[in-house]
Image 1 (cartoon, rainbow, N blue to C red):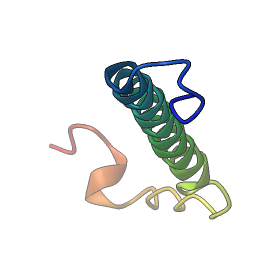
Image 2: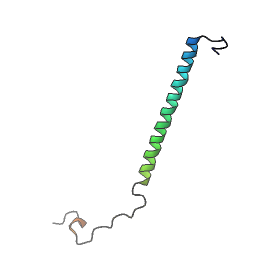
Image 3: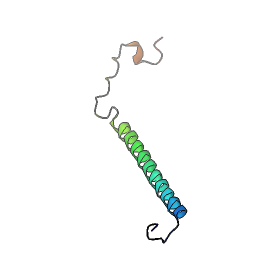
Image 4: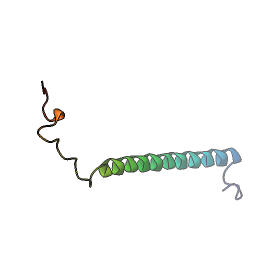
Length: 68
């Protein structure tokens, strides 16, 4: 538009700044989305497929809350 003399240069600069601000917000939103996705996937994958530890044998000290 500037080359066609339909808009003044300061307006072009302001519009470019607005476009850059929108792109920055979009990029920041994508980053936050990706971080949340990684966090959720990480929480879902923690110890999900491993066998839980076996309980302590009956005669072991940690098998009863108050052994003595």
